[in-house]
Length: 116
Image (cartoon, rainbow, N blue to C red):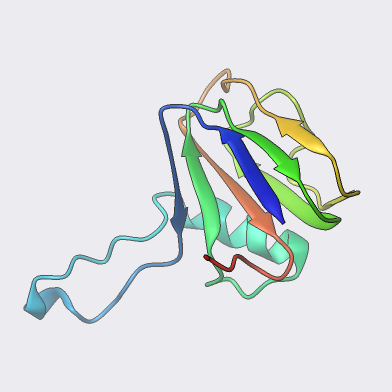
């Protein structure tokens, strides 16, 4: 559904992390800005623990191969609407520049991500 053309310095899939495993040496991990992560998921109708793409300092360039509803939250990057659900047709290209302030931004897609 999403083809990643390029990313900025860092982009990865994040969820809310793993609680209750610290005694085994597993840190909580998860989204660094959990509020923005949860908001992105809420905007597209996902459960708050669904994965999002966390990207640092913008620079994300995506092509949608199928129609999708997406939302961007966190550090506001120029190039698209922010903190709203966007219904995008197949073939849409989403290019985000670096944020004027802040560090991490989040992309949620209705239905979540399936990693193949």
